[in-house]
Every structure is written in structure tokens, then in C-alpha cells.
Image 1 (cartoon, one colour):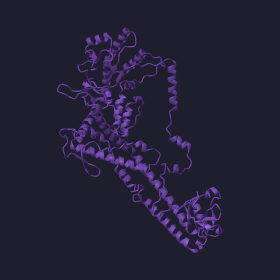
Image 2 (image 1 turned 60 degrees about the vertical axis):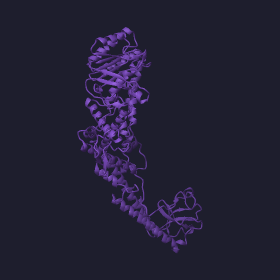
Image 3 (image 1 turned 180 degrees about the vertical axis):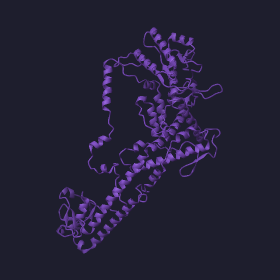
Image 4 (image 1 turned 135 degrees about the vertical axis):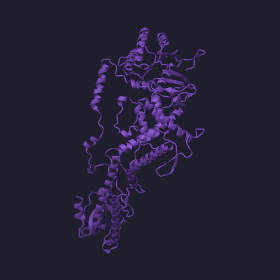
Length: 640
């Protein structure tokens, strides 16, 4: 349609063709302008600018009407059928008086107050993916989304929580290496552990002293930038290339660590070794924009050529127009009595005000008229052809720029797996730094880790109490499994601190699996802090009552006991508060003893609190148990 219109009006002998609307509202305005007729904004010295296309495909971008089907295909579809099925099952279970399925994982985390520790760790992370890894650790395993990961990025996507002894050792190894770098940088070491010449060279070749990884405060929130199906704009592409620059520096920093001492720095280079930066993409994005943030006419010559053509055509048209306005054949017909502008712009075409009595003259194309009808606005015949050429050049420029934007976006999307993997590798380093910082806040130590189910800590303090910054948090000595015992029975009056110790055992076990230093005394000549690998950690602390599920306190404990037995095993750590409570003491003792025996047969480590004398006697007479008591001085608890 545009080409046809151009051919119709590309003649030098055009009559004064009328193209304007007769509607008064379209012509209403002030200062000689209207809604349709606007000031000429052409600046031949500046390049034209166009909006970035929204869609990656040209066909979708050319549509002026949003297709609802197209939108539906791109919206995440809720699993309505599955949700309805689960709701019906839940309602049926409640109607029958059957308790809902117990989420023992979530109950353990909640009863131990472990989310408080993880939230403190999360607050110390600067990168979004690191915070996301911590958030995922607070979700039940069944609800965690499994991501298909390329083998070379396995370390980059490792979860917060270790699933093996080796996993804990790797996490603590990285923490030790990071501690050394951070302590040396902050001057916390009495004597520097790094040589004065220890350095690495960044991407610009500058020598930088060895220290923590150069993450430069980047959030690395790639998910907020990448929206599949939409074209990336300038600021988004610049953000991505900035990420690539930081990733390259982190990779060079890792190389510097290995060059300095490949035997002392192992785990940090292992994590950073996953970083892959596509230099071709990096250079393309760097060169894609000029100093003003527009697409570079040098990098993309066709864009540069079309921009120059547009500017030249605008300059020629304006020059021709100025000449026309001084010729008697035109100037004598101008309607300038009202003091309006000599020319204006209508839909991208320049018009001049002509007295209505010359409307039949072959001056050009009439695009508009004044409200009074005394003035018509004509595009002179002499500039019609050049304006058609200008509009064509602008259309070609717009299309070429759209093609470039789509090409740049496609290049990013093609490299997205390696970009995301590299980002997660860098964010693992952020997570390591957060572990170090949280460890310092808790005055934590890195314990020895084994696979024998041992916990041996002196002056261990409850991390949640430390995070609350309470004064004089009391430390306790904890010993489980060191002498071959499998169970620990904690006794003492109410409000003496037994439950706090029980929770502390679970917390240090979880912190060790997450590579967080535990709050306890450091090494000494006759003591080495130790927290072995425990999986799973299972806790029954507090009541589980439900009116809808028809659960009493005792029934709730029995439900938990059933789940604990079902999930217990060799590396399990089971923590149970007031085992056998909530029913007749004789029945409670029998049930508690039977459960303890069953748990020990699975190979689990078990710690319980109890008031039952029979359980205390069992612990005292059975070598598989140790008895722990809360300290009282002068009839008052010390909470140790």
C-alpha cells in the first residue's frame, strides 16, 4: 500500500490532491498547529531513532492485533487438574478423619528454627542466584525443581546442602580458602599468609593483589533480563556484557590463585573453573553500541549507511523547501497573515500554509486545512519525490535496526546455557563468602567431618540465640558417638535447657552439611571440633495437633514416630523431645523404649530428652547410650 501510494504521488505535475480529514477536531489546535499538524522535528545533524521491536519473530512484530492464542501459548499454564485432584484428596482425608501426609522435612526445619539461620545466610549474599540456592534449601525435596545441567557446569549448580561426606569437605575447603583471602585482605592475620607479590591480572591487564573474587557487587539477576520471545534492548544487552566482563575477571582471578599456589587453593578454582565466556559474543556486545548507547553504525555498516542517507535526504528536503519559500510563485500564495509557522509536519511530510483560493493550483498535495477553511496545508510537488525516498529509507533503516536487535538477542539466547552456568559458578563464590561472613558473626569454627556419626563440640552455642545478639549466650559441651555410643539421653528439670541442646545438635548437623562454620570453641591440644555427615536430620520437637485431622498430642507424636522410622538409616540423626509423652506413663515408656531400640537397629544416631526414670536407667545400663544432664549450681540452672 505504501509503495502504491508513493507511485501515485511521485509525479512532478500533480494536482492539489486532498488527503486531509474534514473533521474539525482533527484540525483544532493553537499556534498554527493541530493534532494532525505538528512542528517539524527534523534534525539533519542527528540520526533517526526507532523503538526496539518487541518480538523475536518478524511475523509477530508486524501484527497490530494481539492474538489471544499467541498470548495463551506463552503464559505459564497452571496445573489445574493436578491442583483439583490434590484438593479433593485432602478434603476426603479430613472427612474420613485421616491426618494429612506429614512433611517431616519441613517440620524438622521449622522445629529447629533453621530457616532463621538460612535467612541470615541469604542476607549476606549479593547475587540473586546464590539467594535462590538458599531458598531452594528451605523447600521440601519433592517440591524442588530439577534442572538439567551440562556436565561441565555440575559444580556451578551444586545445591547449598551437601549430599555426601565429600560434599561437606568440598564446601568447608572452599570456606577455609576464602577465609585466608578475606583475612589477609582485611589485615586480620598477624603475619600475611600471602606473598607480597601475590597477584592476578584483570581483563585489561592490570595487576591486582590476590584477594576475594571480583564480583563487584553484581546481582547477576539474569532471569529478570531474559524473557524468552522478547527482544533485548540496549540497557539489557549492556547489562549482559557487563556480567560477561565480571565473569571474565573472576575466571582470571581463579587462574591467578592456581598460579600462586595450586596446592593450597583447590576448591575455589574448582568452582570458578566452570566459568566460560564466549569472547566473540562479548566483543560483539561491546562493539554493538556507540557512545550514546545506540546501535553502532560502524559495527553495523548497513545501519550507518541508511542513517547517513536519511540525514542527507532530510537536509536536501529542508534546503529545497527554504528555496521554494523565497520564490515569488510560492511566497505570494502563502497564508501567513495569522502569524503561523511557515511550514509544519503532517504524518512525516512537510506542508506549507497556502491561501484557500489557490487550492486548484497545481502546487502539490493538500494534507490538511484550517478550522476556518481559509488556509490549506500543501506538500509542495518539488519535495514529494524526495520525501517518498526519505520514508522508504526510514522504513529500510527501521527494518535493518530491528534485524540487528533480533540478531543480538538470538546470539545471547544461543549462549544462554553457558552464560547461566558461568553466572551460577560465580554465585557459588558469593555463597562461600556469605558462609565465611556468617561464620564470623557466630564466632564459628570449621569442624572435622567424618562418616561415623560423631558430634564433639566444646562450648557450642545456639546460633539462633547468637543471631538475636543476646548477651551472655551460654555454651555447652556436646558429645555424641565419640565412644561408640549411638544414643544420647538428656535429663534434667523443666526449663533447664534440654530442648535448646536438642535443637543445637540438629542445627550444627545441618550447618555442617551446608558448609557453615559452627559456633563452638576452636582446636586445642586435646580437643578437635567435629560434626560428621548426617542425612537425614529428623526432629520431633513440640506438639502436632489437628482438630480437622482428629489428632491429639499423642497421636501427633505417633505419626511423627512412624515417619521417623520410615526415613531413618545409617547416617540419620534423630532428635526427639519428651519421647513417649502425651499418654499413660507406662505405655509411654514401653513405646519410647521400643522406638529407641528400632532406631538404633537402623544405625541412626539418636538424641532424646525425657523425664522417664526407666529410660534413664536404660541409658545408664546400655553401652550404646550416653547420659547427658543439664548443670545446676545452687539450685539454679546454668543452661549448660
